[in-house]
Image (cartoon, rainbow, N blue to C red; front, side):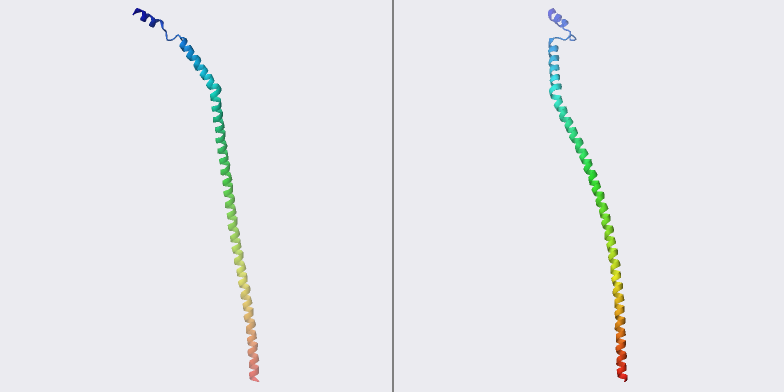
Length: 131
């Protein structure tokens, strides 16, 4: 038994042995392979994705601005159309009033002409009867 105790006493975990060096070397090789061949394509894909997302946000903002501009244009056109319609209604009212006034004056003139003709005919008939 003293032999096994001696073997345990000679082993120091702070001093690296060959297994540790081989594992460290394998780890460094794997780390190099990952850094050289795996991580750059992943970073490239992530960068491209970020750029596409940023572009989509920019396009979305531009589309929103165009939609807001179109809405303002629509509201402006609608206001203009309402003003035009109100102006046309007012013009139609004025023309209607003008036509009514003209027809009224023509009707008055016609009624005066008819009355004058009737009076003249009545006078002519009275003159004939009185003779």
